[in-house]
Length: 158
Image 1: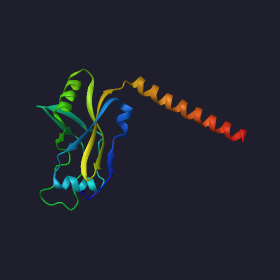
Image 2 (image 1 turned 180 degrees about the vertical axis):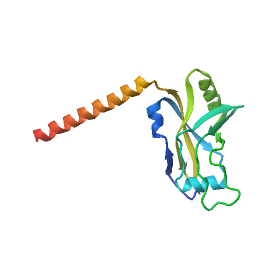
Image 3 (image 1 turned 60 degrees about the vertical axis):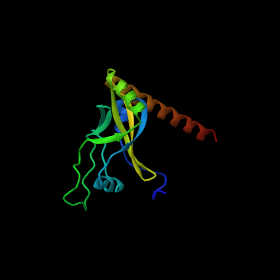
Image 4 (image 1 turned 120 degrees about the horizontal axis):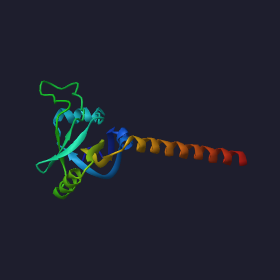
């Protein structure tokens, strides 16, 4: 029986949905050292520059910043080291095939604990062009204005 039940989100990469077009998502386990787990349990991590890649049939997460554990000793972990991700073989093959195609990359969307186990949500994503980003912002703004107008009209009618 795990000590923790449910999901506890540690870090999210909100900028990823703005910069990338998300095609598919995968949940992967992470191979961590003891002080990394303790640092994550304190809610300390940054996914800003993080990415994943497939190498020799294994998936690796790189450039994710997990700061050193404050109460750690001389064997504290390196903050931006490569971390192995745990996925099924057929999932790894799918990811490898997708990343070989032009323009696709693996981006971590969030790190969380699920029933006490550290997980990362990986996205197969394609980079957006600048005009796509502007278009998405404009659509969001137009929808917000329309909702505001509908709400104002509803309140005036009552």
